[in-house]
Image 1 (cartoon, rainbow, N blue to C red):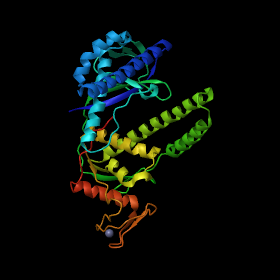
Image 2 (cartoon, rainbow, N blue to C red; image 1 turned 120 degrees about the horizontal axis):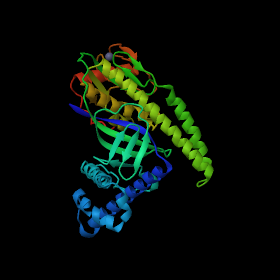
Image 3 (tube, protein in one colour; image 1 turned 90 degrees about the vertical axis):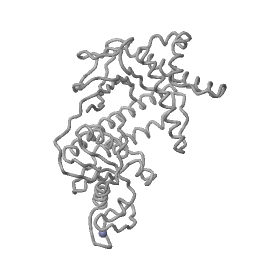
Image 4 (cartoon, rainbow, N blue to C red; image 1 turned 135 degrees about the vertical axis):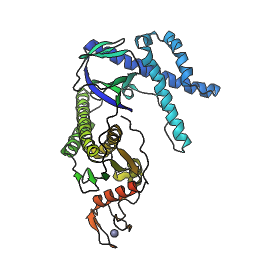
Length: 373
Ligand SMILES: [Zn+2]
């Protein structure tokens, strides 16, 4: 079985290459906005839905109108058509479900940060990434690329540096089968509590990073817009964000790896549902973003290793007694589970993890959405 895996690396473009990358990004953004307006006009004036194929056919015409598009690899342009089409498909899918999604939007200068070679036009030779129409850019391969490279995405990060991400097809590497089963509860006090009593502590960078960010952002907000000082501070904030993002990713990889090595059957709460239930208490903090990433990484690592991972509905996992099924509401500040019916005592999160395990074993779990990596 083949699975998708992504590999990211920092790029070291020369000044000229940086300019070419930026120009390519600008052309793609222009095209995206142009295609979006085509769709809007076609619908408003002719009540016509333009498809991806209609828009692909218009590409040569557009090149006639805007010759600078010729400077971009043709598949990169086709990928922009594809992206817009995906945005529309997601929009219509959510409308159908009765949700109220935002209509696909025009992208401003800082709202378009990547472009993709979906098939060809790129190659990696030793320490160079060769891109059609751009040139050979120095790349630092800090780990080997595995499998077959399928797509190559160039991204400008918040601090203005360029990165490349390869999506590769690699053969799954099943681990020897085991009998072990585990339920996992993620929380604020500990990063995660396992149903067998193991815990994963919150790493120190959670607190440290949040403090740094708060401080830098406060400083930023006091500076006048458009000044040099503000631009500088803005870059510093972006750097902190990037650093936290990397630390978070490494941490999630490490913890997910341990779990996949130790357990065959893995049950987790559906975090999307949990967030909706618990509302504002799940502030957008580092821990919150980490849980989602942890769940994604765990999902794909489990798939790669031939483990079974299921998401369970988080309703009542906190309130219910894992030993007798008695349900009693708990305040958020109550950190202990103390059952009035059967006398079972445990930490709040351990009791929840045990409930998650039981729900998973009852077959009440659902298959997780495929990970977006
Ligand atoms: Zn009980």
